[in-house]
Length: 320
Image (cartoon, rainbow, N blue to C red):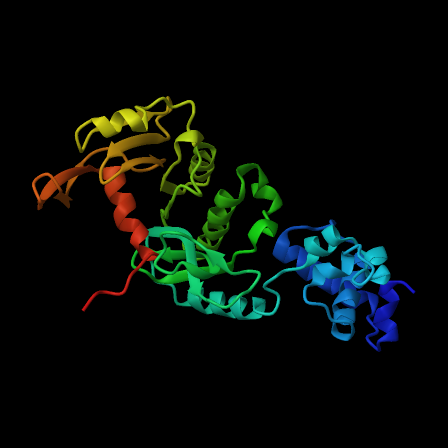
């Protein structure tokens, strides 16, 4: 007995047009048109139904080779990699996110500055999707990709899928981080023709990605890792630590489309932008340990814009 026949045996007879509808919806969500066949989708649904009759602690145990766990029907019907390819870990909550995103976008305020970052939903019980992110206000829980205005209004939420996160075909050359921002940029295109400026941290920023945003007539600014701009030789972090505070170095691409800057603030920070210049200077408050008091120090415009705009997602409750 093959697993696709299990659908009929269990009383779950699926017409071909239903399977085609499921494939179409799956492809539209994950941009994987043609990667799975109708027969594979039948097997996938059959495995889900079988799991209700023959339960195991984790689904992967169906493919274990040990005699007390191995399930020949399942393993012969569909490989574990094939099952992993199809399944969406957020299937049960996907309708909720769809409705929530529709409502959020329907009432979204007009804003030029937006930020994209990861956010955490607090959760402390053991679960396969629970994450730990050091330095976040909430360190344990479920991770979400979030797009919001600089004032904190959330426009888009997407559950993080872990190592199995799907990168749409048209964004695969840019990696996962840039693909998340471009998905949010696509949503912004339906909210009005505005000169949107999207801010992000070093997980998302690459020089080719900023160039791609430029082609799409979108502004982008973000912190950047030193190993992502090898062709731009700025002062090393070790040397900058020896320099006085407020020291600053920058390089501009030949066509002046992208600027990469590095400054000594509370720490050594590198940033890249296709929109924000170095000047003018802004005055910000900093505590100097040597003087043991708060003083005003200058900050370059690109750094200032990044610092003020990224407050939309990482917002902390005010202390009373």
